Length: 72
Image 1: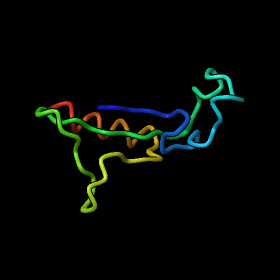
Image 2 (image 1 turned 60 degrees about the vertical axis):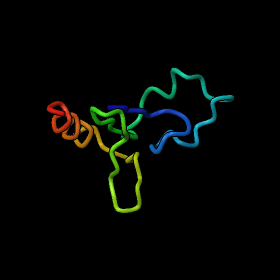
Image 3 (image 1 turned 30 degrees about the vertical axis):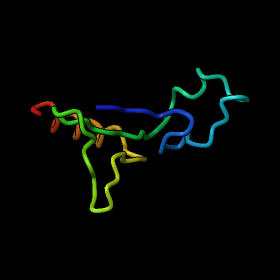
């Protein structure tokens, strides 16, 4: 599982500038982007459109997905 919350990811830090904002200031974020890779190495699709990342996930939502995928 991938959990990202920095510049360019689907989260509140998405538009933070890597050129004007030190990286240590981007370590706080109320949400994150996640992706899940199945045992075959393929990204899991979240919807009928084929989206493989899910953004603006709250910490409890991230943890719920982590608990679900731990058995894969």
